[in-house]
Structures are given as structure tokens and as C-alpha cells.
Image (cartoon, one colour):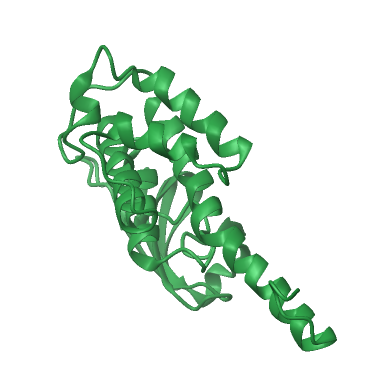
Length: 227
């Protein structure tokens, strides 16, 4: 059976015979077990991390070889609690990656919580990495837009976020980054996309450019900024 590893995001082929499996019937008054559950656990063959899945099925049978379900009709991930839905470049510091993954994971459950985490993450990057500190997030975004080196894709994302967040109608969105507030439809998704663009601008592209310059220097002896 094929599945996506919740840790590394890689499609893996699972031999259930090599995984631990416990089967439990659903009790019935007639002692005729028509359905049941499997708890299946094992390690990803690629990243070697532990996975537990809960399966529901019908046609429960019990024999000398062990109990099993004839047909699985539903399956959910138990552990890890949330899959890592997106691989973030290793150039992004761990503290920012952790916040991003949390915002991504809770988005389907609570877009408000996701948007709040993203807004908090956005202001952390602005304050700590770009040294942009203003009285509110709206002013900080305006300051970021003024930077001559900012790429057009990030400017476009910022402008979209301004329209979605509607700071004028909801000023609290621009002040306390830790406060959970109501959001408009799609705002949490836009925030996540904006954070990815910001990661690319602040962390990923500069590191890649450094690597290119280093290779040129090592191969040709040309130092950057050399006249």
C-alpha cells in the first residue's frame, strides 16, 4: 500500500505485514462482529520516524492466525497528531519554521488561530530580521514596501494582504499581534502565502546568492565587490 509520510512528505510503499497491527471488534448484542478497528504502527522506511494510523473496517473475522478486517473503509492519522504538510527550506531558522508549521496545521481547524500565528510570525521577522518596528503592522508593511530591494512578487503579496486584512475596518488586526480576532474568508490562506514569500526574500535567496558567489570565488578567484 502507498501512503504519504506525515514527516518527510515522501510517498512510501508500506508492507503492512512488517508493521504492528492490533484489531478490535465493535461489540454487538448478538456477538456477531460486523465491524471493527485496526491500530497500525510502524516506521517510515525513508526517514525512520514512527507513525500510527487508525483504520475502520467491516467484515471482522477472528481465527487461529489472528483477527482481521475484510475491508477498510476509513483511515486516519493518530501519530504524529498533525502531518508536516510542507517542507520548508533549511535556510529558514527553526523558530520561524515551527511557527509556520503550526499556522499551517491549524488552518483547517481554526483559520482565526492560523491567521493569528501567521501575523505574529510576520511581525517577528519584520522586527528581528529586517529591523522594521513601527506602532502597528500596517505601518510596518508600508515601510517594507518602500525598501528598494524588495522583489515585485513580495510587494504584490503585501498589497493583496492589505486588501484582505482591511486594516481600516479592523484596526485591531494591525496592533496586537497575539490577539485572536475575527478574519475575513481566505485571510489565513493569504497570510501563509505571504509568509512563504517573506521567507524566500529574507532567508532563502540571500543564502543561495552567497553560495553562488562563493563558488565563483573558489573557481575563478573573483571576490565580490572587487573593482
